[in-house]
Length: 461
Image 1: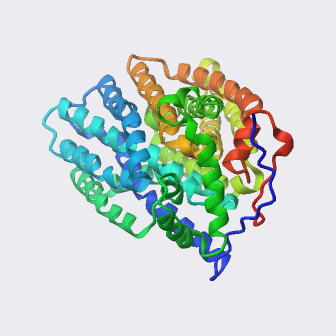
Image 2 (image 1 turned 90 degrees about the horizontal axis):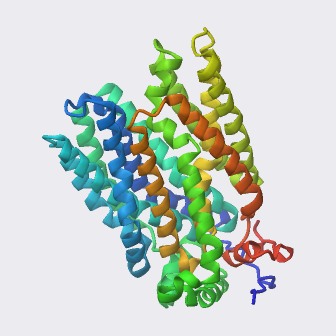
Image 3 (image 1 turned 90 degrees about the vertical axis):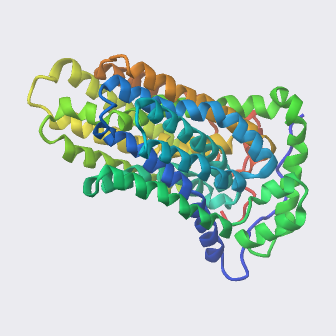
């Protein structure tokens, strides 16, 4: 029997100070929680100048090096989900400092390729902890009207971290860059200044701590209403935890969709282009590929900023659909260029199409996959549900990277992207509900087909 969430509740969450002060505190908590993700992005950026290490001498070794990190993440997402269920997302964000530092030590003092492999694999543990904890934390601490922007911060922190590592590499030696990036782990000490997710406290019946967390994030008003709403969701989701989790109706509705979102995120092209950017640009522009590399990164940043501004205004589905359509058309043109126009002087057109493709990815699939992968799952099921989705996503990434290691033609990559973008558009239209302004229970009812009762109960929206 479905739950009727069309109840007369108002949750304005207005602070005694001002509403903007409340939102400012949520953004501050979101930024601090994403410091580890920024460091992880900088670590991902390390692969783009690993050709300076003598024992990574071939393209195949480079791809295997790249594959170690998502492989490690895939192996540890489920354990990280179990830890988060017991200790909370903040504890997991603090824990990731250990594998992050150990990974850098192995890479800085690497004497052979196996130390590099182990270092990258250990980074995967860090990635597993962050991709499970941070998106969930950002969604759970935010008001409905800024939840989209808060949830998109995870992707933004990754791309800014990659850019930061590449900027450092342009001016400093590789060894010094590695030292700086390792020492950035100290910045995670600022996590002590933000509260634990109030949802975690309520799930563990720690009401006093939950009230303090809500007061810090949202102000002193309407605390009881917020707690009662979370308790209602806990009551409905409790039966799906632990031994009956796999048979729970909310898990079957949401976890497959959540997992598919991350698979499409990995396969749709933005991640592939980021990892193979230099190899893709050289056939298009043999002389000026370094310049175009920075243009691509700029397009990615602009695309993300557009998403950050619009996601809570126009919704998720519209941005995702536009992203899939534009990516599909851009990939189609690049496929045509590689097939028939590669030996002509028309080099500016495919480069323009590539910029449009990566910008469209950053408007839609890049940030919104990580947002929806949390929003689609009800609160009590998120630790294990998000861990399942992240595991599937990281397995896809590692498999894809290993396949590319065995001389897959670059233009074949764009054929794959073209097909995936078209499939993504169908998935968005048929299976994804709009989640803007909806609580978790409203989203679950919408997944179950009860769209006639769907509207936001947040009077501040």
